Amino acid sequence: MRRRNGNGSQQLQDITEKFRRGETKLVKVLEEAGYITERERSTFLDKIQKAVAQKRSSEVLATAHSIHNRIIRILQTSKTERGESGRRENQELEILMEVGRIIQTTTKREEAFEKLLELIRLVIPYENATLFVVNRATNQLAVGAIRGEHVDLISGVQFDHGFGFSSWVAKQKKPILLNELHRTTRPEGPQVGSFLSVPLVVQQELIGVLNLSHPGNQAFTEDHLRMLTLIAGQAAAILQRVLMYEEMARLAITDELTGVYNRRYFTLRLDEEIARSRRHGHPFSLLFLDLDNFKRINDTYGHVLGDRILADLGKLLQRWARSTDLLARFGGEEFVVLLPVTDSGQALVAADRLRRTVEDHSFPRRKRLTVSIGVSTYPLDGVREEELLKVADQALYQAKRMGKNRTMASSVGAA
Image (cartoon, rainbow, N blue to C red):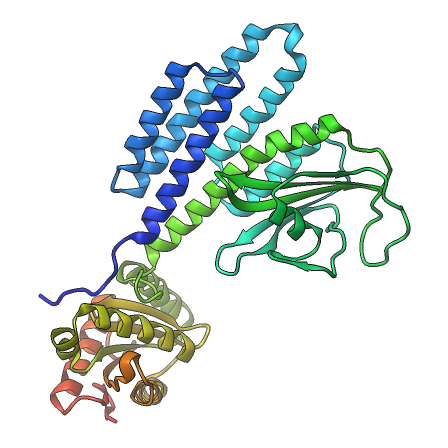
């Protein structure tokens, strides 16, 4: 059996570690606020450690939900016991509980952000709000949600995390309250007389920045700032959880090494394409490609170089493909491409263009490699998933037998 090149599940490990840090910080804040006992803290921390030791992401997330359910029950009990004298604390507990519910029940980014901004508006009288989220690839702030109009200050100035006052707040990781701004008409945005900006941070990791504004002066108080800062800690947990869900969802359908889709996701999409093409009477084609003599690379230079070559090929395929094409790693050095609304002749032309693209490419360590490609077309070569894949695989095998570095479609011939 051929070895499947790959570099493990480092991304999943990173996500799980961020889950651990975020949950640990939440438990610490609750203990410091007197909402849980030292014994309860130890119990929660033990559950967190056991969760991160799980091998499956679903078990980690299930444990997170269980922890938050227990925390909410504790907060509800604490609220009841404090009586009328703790009205302000009760209000903060209500907010924390609502944020906790968002954490538990919401996994979609837009929905979570909208619920969060709506919740904040119940306790802080803002007119405009902008939630920024750090793009982990670029380390720059990007707008995640807006309520009212987009709000920021000194937008033309650049800092480490991008343009605007929000990037300065992100760098300092400190909240800002400005209550005496000039309310001159600003054609590029809303009037701002009062401005609140807080960083969203989990365990020293910047997740985003939240800006609130009001056209009047003295619209925000120190108590508003304190409450928003309290909410921000939980809001950061929401963002981190949503990002974790998104990353886990991406990892579930993506080949970690090459960045293209994995085999399981491809077969699901192939079934959908068959149904769509049957309904509309359109053809589509599959390209089944395999790196020639790749085993020799692994045997001679090792799997480290093999992994680098496969990762580079994944990037090359993504640059070559159209936005409507679907790329997947099928296993080992085998890849498959779905070309929607493409007949056999068009697919053979595309396959040979891809073959020449690979042939002309310089891989890591200046290696020159080639691919053999088999083509199948719906409905000419079959109307079911297994038929189309089998015909493409047979055409690929024939291309290999005929000397490699060539394309083959069973119904058209070699190129």
